[in-house]
Amino acid sequence: MTVREAPDDMGAPVPLRRPLRRVVCLVPSLTEAVAATVPEVLVGATQWCAHPPDLRVERVRGTKNPDVRRIKEMAPDLVIANKEENRELDVRRLREAGVPVWVTVVESVDEALSSLRRLFETALGVPAPGWLEAAADAFGGAPPAPRTRAVVCIWRDPWMAVGRDNFASDVLRHLGVSNAFGDHADRYPRLTLDGIRSAEADLVVLPDEPYPFAAGDGPEEFGPRARLVTGRLLTWYGPSLADAPHRLREELGLTGR
Image 1 (cartoon, rainbow, N blue to C red):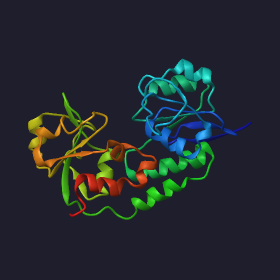
Image 2 (cartoon, rainbow, N blue to C red):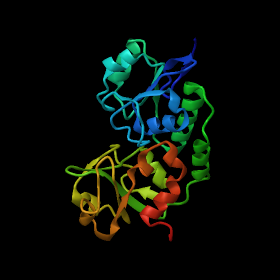
Image 3 (cartoon, rainbow, N blue to C red):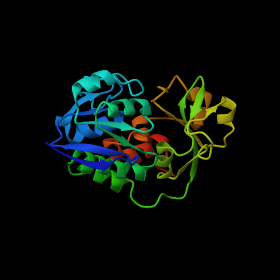
Image 4 (cartoon, helix red, strand yellow):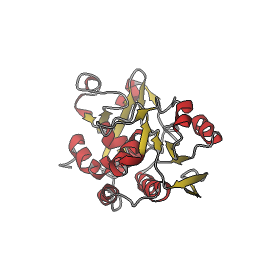
């Protein structure tokens, strides 16, 4: 086995073993990305890694409370993490135990595309997959001028929405939709219902994750402005990126605008 170092998205040097045979992923969207591309190396994932639905790997608890002891026992060649999804404490503990951890940073569509390419070509040592090229084509070109203004809710009781420096906000920007709270001081601000209703938004977007907004849970607060959408299209950076623009336009009712 050979080992070389390369910096992850945080600039931290990561020892990369070749050949790479055992990967644990602590990020649901990246678990799907690895499973769709090099499934033979994936040996562990979190309980929240729901795609692909038939994924059969060992579960190592959640994104915020991974079983660090068990991961160390599994002796993976690489653990994949994300700055927002996972705790710095868990990354540090794994690294101190000699486990290589590749940390990704994704706050925009461009960052997602470049981070995924580096994950495959540099960290995993395989060619960029076809679905990644399709995603780059789907989001190609400059974003159009905003024609629609939206609030994107992610929780209720308390109500929370997407704020600044956020991947979901940038996905919508590529569809010509501006985030009503895109300039908020917080990335996920807590809001009152009156604050959401008075935001002068054309749409109130209600994804089915992380809070499971549904026909009887959420839309009743906002009337005809409410739009239920598939959360994975809005917040996951993986194979779903390839058809996210087309499907989101349909779910948001933007196809005629």
